[in-house]
Image (cartoon, rainbow, N blue to C red):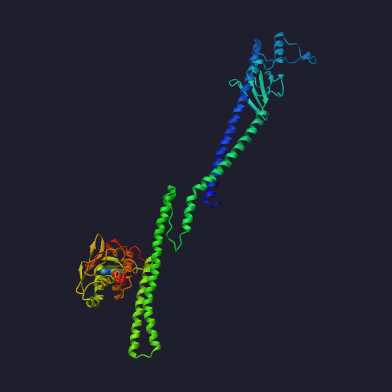
Length: 493
Ligand code: ADP
């Protein structure tokens, strides 16, 4: 099995060329052979007609009687045939003197192989034979056709019905024609082979040119490494079919590069986020171990370590949830859930936080029934409302509204906080993104809340959007398919 594209293309070309040249050569040979032998047959028929013509003047009144000596009878036995009547004698003499007349040779002046002939009477007696004529009388042609051709190995013959149902056979050796055809067959074969060879060479060259852009693409692709994503396929100079492929590969490379960069940043961010609480824990533990401390100080150290451990747990839980979202393995319960109740519960959980930040949280709107995982949807509501409280100003408000819109259960969280800059808006759902890093860190956030919220909402078949004005506040809108639309698409519980 040929593996290379060039080899395959060449194999196809070879098969095609062989079929075309073989077919053409065979047709040419068959046509030439037919033309040559048709000529021979025509020549033989002409000779037979000439012979038949030269016999006609002697058919005379005896046409009803066969041209043969009468059979020996009774007392004539042993004395030889009785003398023929004068008219029959004439006929006999004429037939004995029969030859291919001058007229025939005038018609075929170039004739190299002279035909032979023989004449039989109706009784089957051979009256005249010349050259290689066969002894046995051939079949009589039928009356309508008056002749037929007969092809023996190396010979062509024609049998004609003559006067008085005489049978005339004219034939000749076709060894010379066969030798010529043999040589023609060789010439056709050799020419075909030469064309085949040139065709293959040409095909090899053309295939080389055709795959050159592929080789160039191959080289470019080989040059793309984790350290060097800058190279892209040449689209401008490529043939149309490959330009499409090159464009698609370039788009794929763009996506891969973005994904790779994101992955690298994600790993760096995740390690960074883990390092901070780890460093806190280590320094406090070391201090506690190396210096004698009071019971109260030990208590403080343990409390600090616990906070750091909680922070790490929240981070690893978040990362685990995101990993499940990415692999499509986030397990969701398919229960009846009302976003209004979800919002109510989230607000209840955050009452203390709201009080601490002196932010008023209000719930408005109607029931918003959906099918989904109440705990996960509550997690989303807590993320969004706690953000709305954190990134608010003292005395500000957070309004949570629920309801149905276009068969979707919708929850909007509007705050009167700091808002998000327009350039940051497209990134707020990215992992570890923080529009205002110092402020976010103050509140103990890790930059995963919105990414996880989006993952959970999308796993429910819904979507989450944000609108914001810097300095005026933000509105986050969550919508999931309403209860009438059935459950979440990736319900695996
Ligand atoms: P974090 O833990 O930092 O809050 P999130 O994923 O929840 O992580 O939010 C990402 C970033 O989006 C935050 O750091 C903050 O800059 C911005 N953000 C989120 N919600 C709000 C909001 N309601 N008002 C202003 N900025 C917000």
